[in-house]
Image (cartoon, rainbow, N blue to C red; front, top):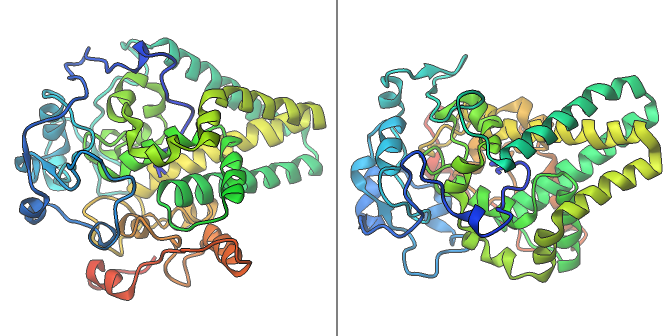
Length: 411
């Protein structure tokens, strides 16, 4: 999801001015510009696994420069993540070109790589997370905000009431299910179904109240996650560590902006005046939400429906990026570490069926089996029954069989 990202998936990552949007080169990372070291997608398919979504569905917000489907440097196929990282960031970057997936076995042999507990994934941090590193002004702001909102979440039990518990669950559903999983992820990022524009915007505003960034940056970042999943251009690859994929990437603006600086992959969002407004005035909408909660319910509501709910939805969203890339089962051969994780699926309204999702990114349904509970899909089905959701996309049986791992368990 991140996201993802997912987002991907976290607070606003957009630069506050033009200078802040320039890529940092302190670690030998070159600026974002086109690379000439290309081969065609057809010639590289022998080295890269392509999902049924990529083969049978049109790309979302495809590049306009005629570079769709090109793959950078085929010799990267078969390399460890660590070796790919060193080579990729020693050359000019092109964020729109597909990179072959790293070889998990090669990564396991990398000096200093450690196995994520109870998984088969070997990771090695590439950034200093806390000490002996430079914190930008934005990094310091994120750390201060995250500390404050987490302290508020810890204080919530001292203001317990059943009314506040109910407020927590209502806002959890509104922002987590309707806002993030249904709107930001399945509708805006992957365009897996269509609703009337007014309803699309209502759901998107629910996503704004999750405080995970404005729709444009969320969608752009998550699309990069899928384009570059678990390669060095993935904004939150698990190969750089569980903590990095969960939350660390949000606290290192320099490293993250290198990978998501170009939001033109979400031009369909950028051209909408409503989303342009949310991008420009996002902070004020967030402040207004917290102020409204306090005005309506006082400190108890602010801590339960505000802080605790926000932190809860944060970590549930981030577990899709971290836990669902190391723990669980794989039904489909996606070439990456995406997993179907039942407890993330339950807590994240169906997002934990992540291997299914990476196999069929366009699908409005992630829990493809009857035993895979997918609350978000149930909402989409209800909207379809009411005539409010159309063009609902689902994988065909042919597509599923093409990628199914022989004898793989469904969950």
